[in-house]
Length: 138
Length: 138
DNA sequence: GCATTGCATTCGTCAAAACGTATATATATA
DNA sequence: TATATATATACGTTTTGACGAATGCAATGC
Image (cartoon, rainbow over all chains, first blue to last red; front, side):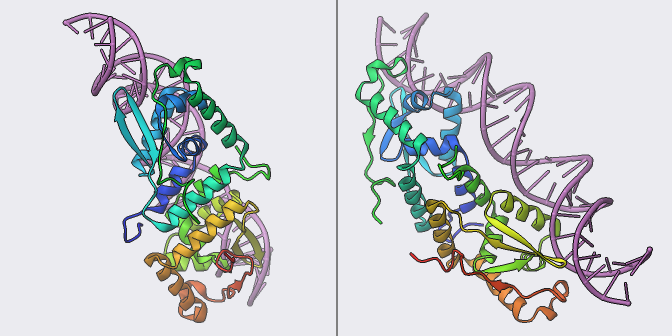
């Protein structure tokens, strides 16, 4: 069951139905991040993070880009208008949720001083992404 | 991971991550329906329908009310504002989706002439529900 | 009380998904 | 070429969820 554009809400909501994936999306709100930041901020095993990122990718919610040794992930705004709005609402909500705010705070700290984190030695600094849910208009 | 109000987005999205449940919610858009209508419109086994309704109930998305032999189900608008908006967007979208429109058309037909459907003999007519996603303001 | 009706639940099976652990792959670097 | 690093994937296990088929249960009507 998909829309004319081929969008599948079932799959979309399944992808959102996991707290780890919600936290990953929250971190990608407006930037292009490499895996080590997710691992550092969520403080969870790297294979677990990679698997959830792969799931998000297979659902079409994120895009992966290779940059030397690093893989950067960013959100792909769906073409389906309803799904886009859902993501926008969700990101508006993240700004009021404790865990999500704390994750963002930790990410900001990590980005401003990556040398202080063992796992982030030499990691590329995240780059802003314009077409993201946090910059979306309403 | 829940909000201060105790709302769990993980569970919420899991509940939305199934096409049968999305179709059930669509039918409940603005009325209080008994199980036989879901069975008739979706044309699927009654235990399957009941199980999905139970899932939606356990996730807090619907409320069940007994009326003699019949069980009526209706949507419960979440207290969480983000979740409410997500449901509203979803219902706006349903009005543009073929399957959902067809289901609604079949439901309307069934309601206007229940005697013509074998499974609906004596079934109570659905009753409108005011606090529903389709009547929600934007 | 007994049968019928409307619905829920149980049971067994299968598939999907989540996880930790281990290992493979790709790139960079010495 | 050999090694280190960043990330992905495979493996085995456990949990969750979906399903059809059968059964249970509550309310009604005789």
